[in-house]
Image 1: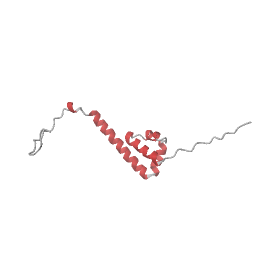
Image 2 (image 1 turned 90 degrees about the vertical axis):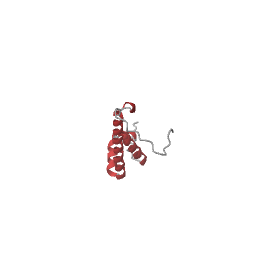
Image 3 (image 1 turned 90 degrees about the horizontal axis):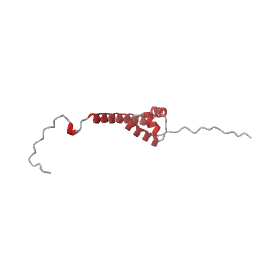
Amino acid sequence: MTQHTSHQTAPAPRWTGAKATTFLKELAVHGNVSRAARTVGMSRKSAYRLRARAPTFAQGWNMAMADAAMMREVERLRAHAPHPLLDPRPLPPARPPKQGDRQGL
């Protein structure tokens, strides 16, 4: 007796609002489309397709990439900034206290 098994493929995963939101948050942190897509169980290609057909998602994508670039720049500057006690730049001159300023607090 031969059994016939049908090889039904599972339906392709779909984008949801929750997945899109999580994707954009991940993209803003790491700036990596593949990583953000994997985080939500979607492919990189499907993310680009969604971006092409959903203007609000595309706008969020652009903002997320700008955030990621800004975070990378902050980290780069932080990595190269001297410790405040070792900073060779002179301190700004102290301002003289104004009349009525409370001192000793």
